[in-house]
Image (cartoon, rainbow, N blue to C red; front, side):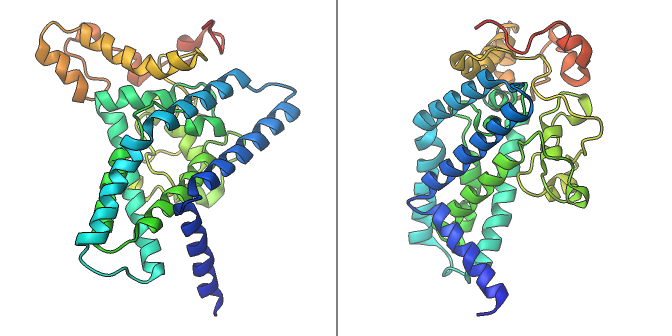
Amino acid sequence: MTLPERLVKAFDDFIHLMGGDNGFIALTAFYVVMVGTESAAYLIATRGRYDLRDSINNAIVNIINIAFDAFTSFVAPMVVYEWIYSHVRWMDAPPIWVSLLLAFIGHEIAYYVDHRLGHRVGLFWAFHQVHHSSNEFNFTVAARGFVIDGNIVLHMCAWPLAFIGVPPVVWLGMHGTKSVWGIFNHADWIPKLGVLEEVLATPSNHRAHHGVQAKYIDKNYSQVTVILDRLLGTFQKEEERAHVGLVKPFYSTNPIKTELAGLVWLRDRMRSADRWQDKLKYLWKPPEWVHDARFAEPAYRTVDIAQSRAGASLVEPN
């Protein structure tokens, strides 16, 4: 067996691990080890300058998500994927290296679509802003999200792969493997990676995605590469260091308040409208849309970091 063949086989074995019965356990192990190592390093190297309360909040929010989100965002769409693959696919499974390549490309496209919708549709942003509401940027933030801000759109976008014979275990394995990168690119301590910044969703590029400066908002949606961002005009390098969080900062470390903050935001915006037609528009219009200029949030695109955070502590009372 040649070296390229060995590499393909090794990657295939890893994909089947991540997509198999023990995939969730493996991904959880990666997350726990990465979070534990990073937090310990921060606490030792910075003498305690690590927001442990925020990290614990992120962990609790993640547990809530796992408990309530598994069926709607994962099991249900994957049942459809399995049915398509087993009953109506158009061709036999291609060679493994082709399946792996198709799964990677398909996942990049699906992730981009799912992520961009999460930022550009009012209802979806009410869900997704929970992930952005932390004022920290570390491995624990990777799993912070709303209970129904899962990957249902992502997995639905994968259904065409089932028709062309990409096995479900390969799709799931690719999803799990790329999720490890999704944890990695929330590392604030990793410096810029030179030429890799041009092609990969590095921690620096993803920190820009979490940034509240106007130039960074709604940029860098991709998970592993930035190819689609470049092609579709949503790529932005991190120039000055990104300030992460929401343009209207959220400080609570109460898991329930964290989970409901986006819905509270959406409720308030809908209440500001008198006509039901305008109320409903807040569900599908972009987050910055308002029915009346008097209710605009001018800081949404032109946030002044010094003014928006002047005098604010990192954590407010719960």
